[in-house]
Length: 244
Figure 1 (tube, helix red, strand yellow):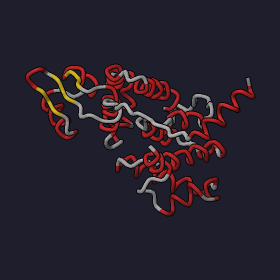
Figure 2 (figure 1 turned 180 degrees about the horizontal axis):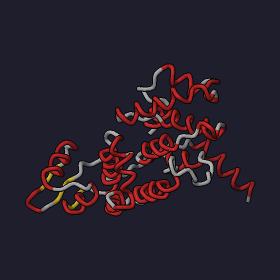
Figure 3 (figure 1 turned 135 degrees about the vertical axis):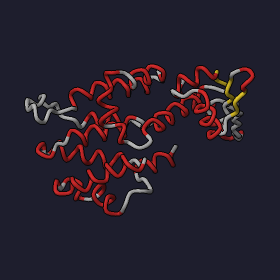
């Protein structure tokens, strides 16, 4: 877990320039917001992710409301949506100021409409309600999100499936094919190929997928032995007698 946290804090794909903007005094320089926004769109196109860099954008928007770009905010939230087990989505929400709905018909702000959709999707993922997540994501309510944003986010659906797989690995040794289909929103050959890539075993005859053992789904009992010397035990008894 420590390694995962280290990668989260400092992704290996982060360039020295971005490192300086994230960690140095230039973090609060509004002139650098364009560089950070370009870096976000690089993440959208490349399946990379850098939470701290994206949070720096939101902080700059917070201090400089004139810089606010709703499309950037939505894309940041989309990337944060699949960051489990880290609370990135909520960290992003904490930096969003309340804004009045735009009255300009030529440039309406899409965030007030899409934020409830994104929040619902995030909650469904966190609650491991995966079939409900896919139903919501495929619904008419999320059409604008799909057509205008996630379609541009390379690997978004596979990133969601990565969240699902982490949960399944932690909870199951074997899982029914139909259930796994509903969790991953895959069926037929697509599911078979996906399971094969994971290295899991598809027991076709009984419609079950075997999940390899890991620390979560196959806990091992351990016996802890403490060697206490007689002088130490004597001190403990004497101390207990004094307290009594």
